[in-house]
Image 1: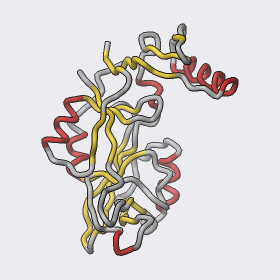
Image 2: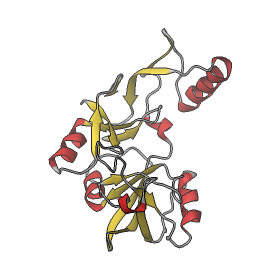
Image 3: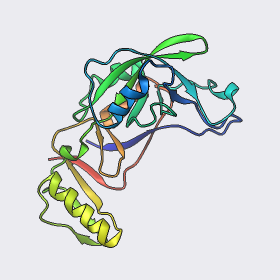
Image 4: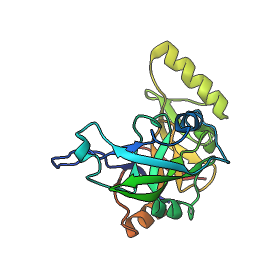
Amino acid sequence: MKYYKINYIRIFETKEEVIGHANGEFVPNGKEYFDRIGKREIINNAPVFDYFHLQSHGPKEEWEWRLQDVHGFIDVGSIITGWYISDDFKILLENFKIAPFYHFYETRLLYKGNKLKYWIFQFPINPLQNYDYEKSEYFLENERVMGLKTAEEYDDYDYTIWKKTKKNIAWRKTVLVDPFDFVINMNGDKIVSENLKNAIEAMNLEGLEFSELDYVVVVE
């Protein structure tokens, strides 16, 4: 199975140039909830977050010029590590294997006078657990790093090396513990399987783009 990097489109060759991001400033107690989500807590009893609106750093009349199936966050809620996604995108993701532990929070998006169902997609909160460290291949400059067997060992080694040299470990082969269709890599890349990529393209979901990886992702 081949994997790709996925991201959402933010900048366009138009007079508006940038899309609006989701602002939850009008959600009751929103900042409290969003701060908890941003600190990697999964809130199972969260209410429907009503409501978000789109906002950019451009003029207010341009905030709603484009609606996508995925947006980022701005202002209140910008601490959230995740995406703001449409109901169609959420339903599609539920049919694929997302790396643990993630969550969807139901919201309402006020867009051009109408309230739409949108979701906070909280990315996997502990991505280090989703890899086989003994089988993966990573290098410090051109020398392969050997002997790391757990996420904790990798994290400690990476931190120690960074403090001493200000250099990061480079992954050349990433081995997943399960055949995930959506996973976050060590450097923060969002990665999807070819099956999920094809499904997104078949549904014509707006605002997503894919690119080739410069490392290998496999399941062994």
